[in-house]
Amino acid sequence: MRGKRYLAYICVFLLLVLAFTMVTCSSEQATKTTTLEEPQLHSGPISGIQEGDIWVYKGIPFAAPPVGELRWKEPQPVESWDEVRHCTEFGPACPQPTSDDWGGFMTIGETSEDCLYLNIWTPAESPDEELPVMFWIHGGAFRTGSGSQAVYDGVNMAENDVVIVTINYRLGPFGFFAHPLLTEESPNNSSGNYGLLDQIAALEWVERNIEAFGGDPDNVTVFGESAGAMSIYSLMASPLAEGLFDGAIMQSGPFLDMGLPLNPDDTLENAEEKGEEVSEELGCEGEEDELACLRAKTPEELMQASDRGDDPLAHINLGPNADGWVLPDSPSAIFAAGEQHDVPVIVGSNADDGSIFVPDIGLQQAQLLVSFLYGDYAEQVEALFPVETEEQVWQAVSDLITEMGFAATARFIAASMQAKDSDSYLYLFSRIPDDQRSEGLGAFHGLEIVYVFGNFDKVGLDTVDQVDTDLSKAMMDYWVTFAKTGDPNGSGHPEWPVYTAEGDKYQNLGDQVTTETGFYDQAYNLMLEITGR
Image 1 (cartoon, rainbow, N blue to C red):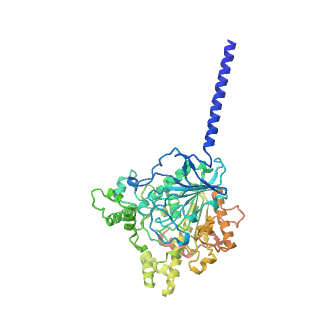
Image 2: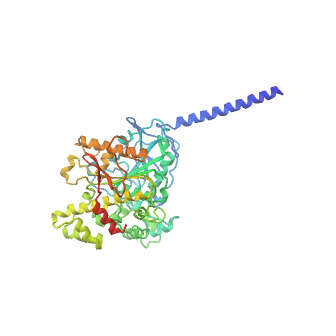
Image 3: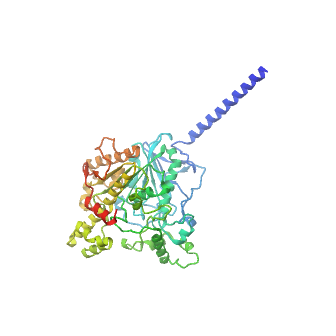
């Protein structure tokens, strides 16, 4: 009996050893197949390229191509693959009107409706490093742009031990087209926020897959400029995005229903009316299957129907709407009520954000524009931005857009965060590189992006001096440190105080980095009076 019992013990021991060996081998095999050389995603394996010490992966699909019947549908899961997918070239940008590329700032390249791709730069040497993730959302008025633009190249930022992600999302009549029939078709009784849903889908992709690139899915900071910043405050207001990011950086994104009320009614009903205008323009209204007619139109036909020529005032303003599902209310109302997501925030604007948006108008037209936008408050606005001659129009309108639109929004967001536990940090970017001074645009809209990413050489700013490179390092350090800790301080640059409405301190990112007070007080207070907030 003892011999048999002993033999049984030996058998059990051998079985345990065999099981342990199988588990160990399986673990080793899994580790070997999940490397930076060939990361294993939920959808399949991919490969990338190395640029110095940085692994780069371009054109990774995060959702199925939104084409055919999937045009104007929520993003769907990407189809899986078995063979290694070589992600070494950017995917196409989403369809958009062609425009001046601003000397390299806005070069887009190939476009296609099959455009839901993202790009990753990572300094990790193994998948288990748990590095902070910075998730960039590009600007372009919700009409243009892509994550592959040269100014957003992530190599320089990634060298600071963070993983950089840039994305595409549907634009214009593909990303923000609402229509009563689309709302009826939707299981969520919603239409028109497909671009935001793409961004949410990309964040969910990061949550599932970023560990394969050495990133930490529990430390994701979203950052973006212009429409990218507007997207972020929409994400901060959306219940669908809750928990998908842990910090937010918003660069020059205005609320268009407040200090610069270009879109004061962003309801679903209003968005549907705009969609009906486009359908009528395309000859689909009244068709037996109106949606089939619309889905059969080419990208060029859709863009032409919504853009209506070169006059920006003729564009049908397509952007996010308060549909009750993606956005329960306008983001400005949600921030005013203190109901936005509770994450730390950096927010700010540029000293001359408005300079590139001034329309070609004269004195009388400028007065009519102010009257149209501000109604009973037109006299107060004109008193703050006085103009008496034709020569004064351009600067006055530029200042109005800068202060009432961009700066007032930034301060409002910073102040709104006092209702939450998380801190906010306010900035003003005021640096003008020497080779831009003769252009007369000042610290124009989007200029700060080059400093954040450190990509002067990629956008044609070849004459930058030590002031520019020092400022770029300071801004990159602030942004990256914030992504790591939720606080921009700690990298050796001047202390950046937490924003409070009482102190109203902000960081001036200019020829020198200084802390100042009084962030456009008059414009901000007038905006609050006009909006009753």
